[in-house]
Amino acid sequence: MLKTKPSTECRFASFRRQELMNLIWSKDRSQGFTVLDLIIVLATVVMVVLLLPIFASRSTRPAARVRCISNLKQVGLGFRLWAGDHGEKFPMSVSNVDGGTSGFLASNEVFHHFLIASNEMNTPRFLVCPRDNGRMQTTQFTNFSNRNLSYFINLDAEAANPQMILSGDRNISTNGRLISGILRLTSKPPINWTPDLHVRCGNIGIADGSAQQSKDAPLMSQINSSTNMAARVAIP
Image (cartoon, rainbow, N blue to C red; front, side, top):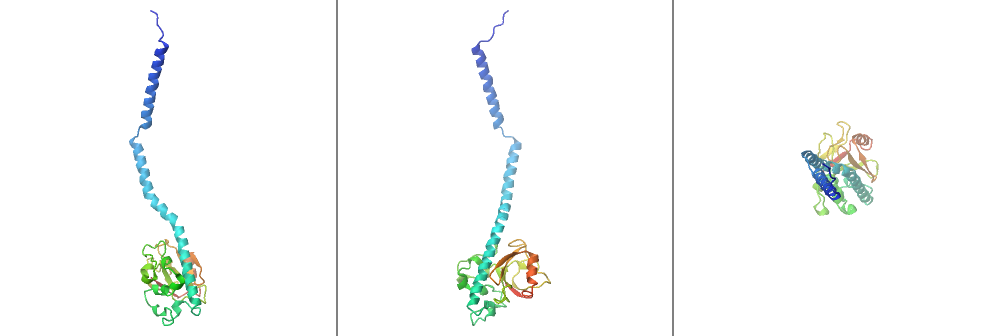
């Protein structure tokens, strides 16, 4: 019996059916979403959610320290301007009767030493460190207090001695924890920065109006200088 070849039309129809089946099969394969795929996606989302705040915090630290140094420079400038009108003396060396703050040297109300120079500093907003969550900014000196202040003041700083420490971050301590009150700068026990604010680092303002970043070793070197040893700092 003779075999006849399928007509061209039949072969074409068969080819089209096979092509259509292949296309459907391909789409099913490409659109499939396995359990493993779902686990990978969920794990990625969780990692992003957990790690994003950490990276964001690290990226803001340098900017916060730059702003903090700028704040301390403004403090130094304000105190220099005040001293220029008061016999080249800082407020802590001038009696309350003469417009200074020497009457508050034993007080925990550290803000008085900054408040007296309000005319020279215009606004108290920069007296809060950008990373100090324990203090609140205020725009008015009329309600200014320790809760609006992030910086210590050196009660023994002298305008005539420009290399003395004038001010700095309040996370200065002898026991690794935030403290308030009067702290004497000594080598025993050593002074260091707490983990707060700038993470075991800090910034200090100098009596000449400059400011600088500091870790524990440079801080102790500054303290051990003849101009700063045994000086008293008031921490808000």
